[in-house]
Length: 142
Length: 234
Image (cartoon, rainbow over all chains, first blue to last red; front, side):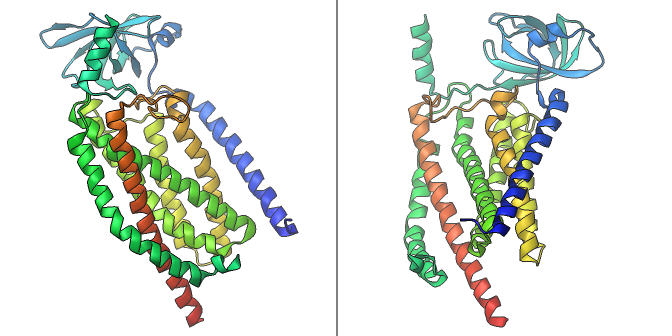
């Protein structure tokens, strides 16, 4: 069905696909630390040598009832429902920042328990719904 | 059978389709905008910012579909030397690039009030930016080379890399932790977007697809005329 020249081109193409796929895979393996946008509290727990000067991001859920505000400092707990980390931050938080919602904090680790944030980003989840539906869901949950 | 592949036959038939499309695209876009701006409800936490989704998501989808299509056509042209495929991808690539830019731009507009930042170097946003680079390189690949053989090689190689990037875009939100939310709509499970928001989204997708088809047909006819003119000169 294929003429000989087309056959050669097909094998070049298959070769190119394999070559590119493998090289991209290897590049991604090497750069994995850079691709990961944030670490979960559990991943922080597993770090052996903490670099307090390195800027990293920690992400998870803001634990219910954990937000404490003092003057211009805000303190809250980020949880992935297995481990937790205490985050302190001074500055303005995004409008969507709330308890029980996703958050990504950018800053430096003090130790495995404390994180000093320079910037707070709110993370939105994949759920989109009108306010009334959410109210109904909450009532049903109770 | 061959009658349908004849360029002049395609030219007349696309002219007829264009006339119909011209007539229906604008009303459907207007309906889509009315649904997304006035009829659909606000989101329980994002408020009115959710309305950006109705342009952001369809644009992103169209830019992905377009790249898949031009890659397929470029590879087809490389393998079997089907010259008419080049007319198709030359007409599709600028549309895909435009929608890719729209998706990135509207995403930034949405990110500022919700995340608190215009841009984040997470896997989804970065791979989408790379897609726009692939579009630009692809367009340069056929614009800047006069040799059709060489341009077929360049375009098909970019296509291979771009197709791998498409897979990365699709799965970026499930393979790595990203700031961008995971996908809400899938063929295999119930959508996490409420029906009252899903309807305007689908209308807008349909409207923008028709709009893309309109631009595509116009561009395709121009490219055909260009080829005809060139062959007349020679």
